[in-house]
Length: 573
Image (cartoon, rainbow, N blue to C red; front, side, top):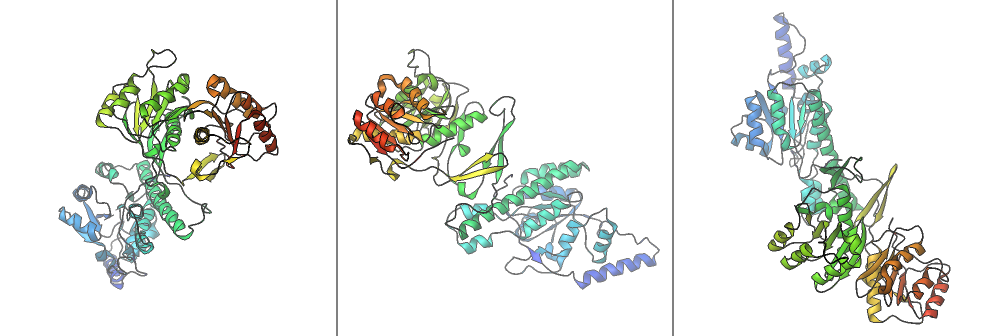
């Protein structure tokens, strides 16, 4: 659904019956008309004046709107601060209490829930008995309702807030007015977004009767309220069910950020939506990244940039990650980020060409120059080409230099991805929800299963490879040495094939390296484990859990290879 965050609105008012004075005035007018021989058919408006109800928390554009409506002959009905702002802008205003004949009460909780307001909004102008009922009770109709809601979203995401304060910021009267006007959109124009004020005035000035325009405003109004309610629902669930990750039902408030050129393929239409769930506030990630330069992002760009950024955000030491088609093809960690960049590209320069490069450090002038001028290790001549560079920040000079690499290079600045997020994935007819895979080597135990214990450097490489492998599509194998990926095997239907692809790329680099597998090896002898041992691997890190784990232990012992069980699987489909 579309999100219209940060709006606020007037509080509600409730009166069960209209005043007797209103009924007496209505009866007097009807009697006078009958005595004069006039028709007793109900009038469309008792006052003969078009009425607009305005009550806003966000008063952006209010003065222009009020003056525009007044110029078009509208009588403005308003409350509280909105009325004061309109009067200050030179707009004549009738207070809501002059219509309801009832004062605001209960600390402002009750204001507009009154038949004199909602009757004038909900009455159908093509139903004679509706208009007759309005006349009987002295109620005028409303042609325009302009409302936005209490800034609940901003309030509960601005920092520490008490439960009581959160409750008081839940709007009641505003959503009721919006829904009423949207339901009766054939007769009432409802506006919830200040960006729509100019088109509203143009529509009224042109005296148009475009029902599609009215329907679009009504759709936007219902989406506005639905998104607002989803924020309230999410907040209340977290306040009441702190230990339960999965509510019985929930709504994801989405807002269109951009229409994309196409989807994964040119024949597929696509768009990008931002998620305004409370849980994602300040969570970082590619969705909230700032694009400083380059062509507009494509569908595949978003997927690849997300994969690269999620991977590089895992590392504490200066690290560079190169991604192609959502799989890492080179990862390197070094104190010198320039060296890390060169080594990450060197890991698989063919795949790196046309890929996405991500850093977890600020890109300064020196690094920008290296990215701009670095030649492919395959021939030492071809300047490396990338679709996207993403980093947590850029120096002024670094950004200037990097922009000079290419007019099309997309340069993104992103905040570090948050942890503890709920991961959603669509299947036909439903959605899968799971906790994000946030475990790091520091969260688990690497248990020695073999006779030989790994040396410190080997254990460090095993942890590095294990952290990389969870970002590789299953079946996944990562071979690493000196905190550099020597090669990766990904996405094969069987683990042995992924392992063979990895060794084919690694060559002699595999000797003395660490190997990490995203899941256990079902077979050892004459299979993946023995092939790894025969290829010179020094240490293997895998989850364990196979009924043939002892075969893996015996095989590693035969070849003098260290075997570590992590107890944690890292499938990625």
